[in-house]
Length: 276
Image 1: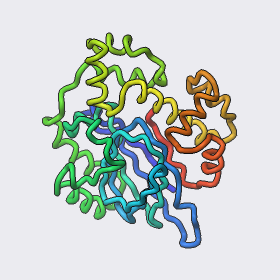
Image 2: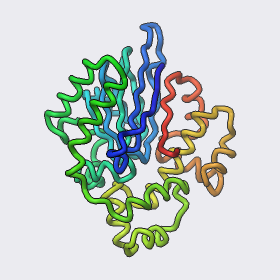
Image 3: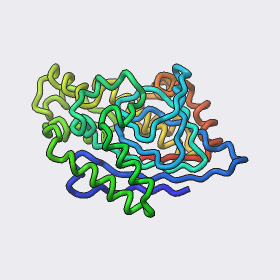
Image 4: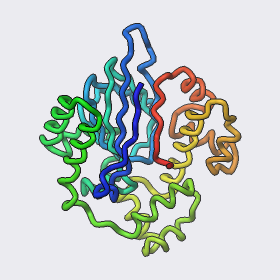
């Protein structure tokens, strides 16, 4: 398995957090190409360069073969991903609020689907980019191709607002900041803050804050399998373990113990740099 996070070109850092390459080749006899992806506060654009993947929504049980490029906005459901045997995905992780600035579409309008076909939102050029990526012979060239595509949007981005500088602070503090404090830092009234927040991130502030804590708890457990859930709850800012259990039941559709067993069985651990 190969996984690498790249810093974007300095000109892109205002709306792109990182570019990830994740490559795995499974033997035909292996069954480890199926793994869980929790709902994350991160929005992204992803390219499937080789085999396509199948995604199952744990809540609805709906399965779909993902297209060669997908856009993932606000999401509150866990998914079971069955990757192809020859798996290579390139993921552009946006800064909080970055996907809104990139697309110019209110993020609360993207809650209706788990993932959108890149062709649907970005037109034929996204397929041309995917085709060129398939012909590239190195990860560095792939990164440059993705960046060249993103450069074209620099003059079209929605303007930065004070609230965009507040989002990273909220995430760094694990969602443990009061709304009136965040609104003040954003130079907005509480009502204005909640409206602009949902426009740029897709969820109400309190719901997003819970998602931040939940996804951080998931990542801590994934990277430190031996840590107790009680310690996970403490490290991620939960009042007690019962609040952590409630969030796992809502966002993952399962108790923490079930997720722990699932993570131990999975060999495809896709780590996330959202909290770095």
